[in-house]
Length: 233
Image 1 (cartoon, rainbow, N blue to C red):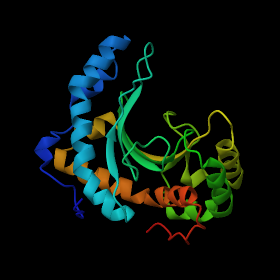
Image 2 (tube, helix red, strand yellow):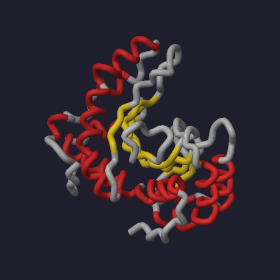
Image 3 (spheres, rainbow, N blue to C red):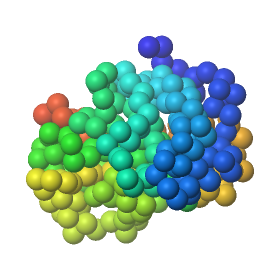
């Protein structure tokens, strides 16, 4: 995969976000929402995933493979959010460190981290305990830390305490569920006012700002001691 420093491909392949994309996430019934997502949301996510993969791979220092959520396990309740993701594995993203870009009726978000399916969560909890303060200093003050990847909001970096870090680390050790995700987001109205080119560039910049989270999670997966994290400029 050839890596570039800017979004790859023509922005016209993405086409930008419009009212239909957000309205799709408001359709009340399961079948109706899934159909609306298939027509009005998923093609955009597929384009974004392919376009940003080379640039994100360059920033990660390794190939990141693009994916788009299929929600195959859902049969009754429609998803409140849907997303594309990038993972270092060609076999999926849920058990691996990953980056996400998603949409809900409220707006668009990006996030980085690992979810409960990752088998290395105990190692990640240990790294977060030892390196959480350095990670906090490396991230944007408005980034939100979450212990549930589906939660609409979390604790902003500016208000994140040692107690919050301890709670997040403890949550990773739960047997059933326990995520670590750090997110940035844009309201619906803001996204609707962006051109395709502007959105892709802002999305790439936001994902790049969350790359310290990805790197820490990747180190946990590889069983390596974390490198010193740079402060956010």
